[in-house]
Image (cartoon, rainbow, N blue to C red):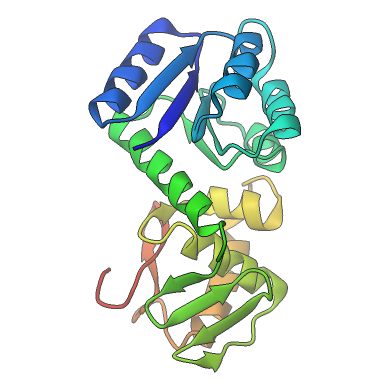
Length: 228
């Protein structure tokens, strides 16, 4: 499976996460603070890091910045901080995903799988394929059934953010932070408008989606036609 480093000062959360991930076959190491975590990550070179922001010695955002200075390891932030400014700061600092406490253990495990899938995609061939939809981030080219789809920069970024999490529901808060680097307030309209334009270019509508499915009150899921 994967090697995971959990950086969490709460012993009960740390233990629960470790037990759940080991039950799934992952190799897990833990740290209760930032300094030990930095040394642990450099020494063990894990596949993914779960990082709390409320650490006793160093703020988690600083730990994230230091990690990004020495390793490209995927980092999944797990924290009680749910304010928009912190979410945007973490994503801008290089976090690959952001989960707010309290969370379900299965939810975190699913996010780890998604991060690892994206990491694998970013290897020799970063091209994303969802049914007949092909997205090449290097050339920023999109084709549908072999035909080019002309997208604006934001439309491409929105589609890429959704397709890189194929099968997952992505919240509008996450999309707004990743694609527009904006806090959430008032952002629904921004996402909805660009999503409408994107759907039109993919030959679908909100009422009759093919690739982009709205999960009311939760977010948007990108899926192959017939697998919604």
